[in-house]
Image (cartoon, rainbow, N blue to C red; front, side, top):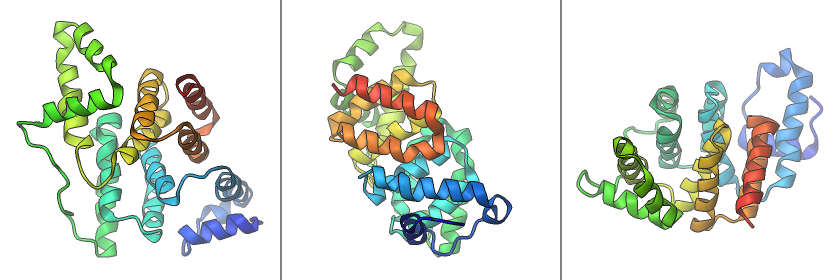
Length: 249
């Protein structure tokens, strides 16, 4: 492969021992993709390496890219991500992609941890109980999204109000209150998951605003989309950019 110096440097930093079979079977494609991913993309984002890896893991789960995820977990460990951070990315995806889509990734992660000598289960990160999870989750919703949450609760039909309770308790109370990742991490991961799924523009608008609330500015979101583009393609990336430009006035 004819990789640029920058592409070689970045690839060897995170995947020093990995040689893809595709470099033998599809060398022209791999040359194009690696130069794009490891040179052009890296030259146009200021997102820290750790954040890039968090959202890469998240988008691979959302896209059901199990083989690529295995490689990315190895890369994440190579650059120093902690086991708890990798696990928390997985857990954060559950309310957004569903358990059916994240289960295999959880299983594979445990296998990789076992091979690396990382003990599981890792220490628990939960900070809520069955008694306070709904209240704590609702507080986070209000802090992130403001009055729109109150309006949503007021306008929801009676036979659908349990979905609001699910959001308070399960999505926010059970997951956003966990340690291991901070608010900025979780909202950037969530933005990346929703952008990767596509067809969730209203939710992406909400979490674009949520990112601004927790301190991730417009440039951070643009940088995130830059990192996501090789994995999610142009249509979803350009849709995400349009929403960023709409919300971040």
